[in-house]
Length: 69
Image 1 (tube, rainbow, N blue to C red):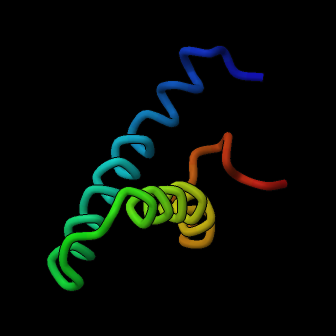
Image 2: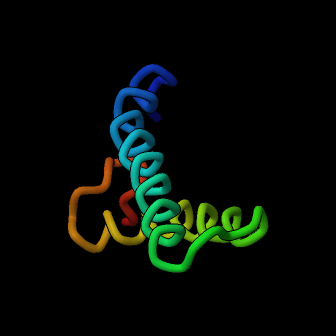
């Protein structure tokens, strides 16, 4: 098992990318649909947070911690 520092080193770029993707999705939805409420915003953020690891595994750029054996 990796140390905590190694886990953070592997995951930090993905956390940053996921955060930026969440902001981009929220901005795109608000630009196309208009102002949305808190609950739809939270739903979009959760959808990105759940979907991001699956997408990066599928395209083959997931960190070793997210890879399935």
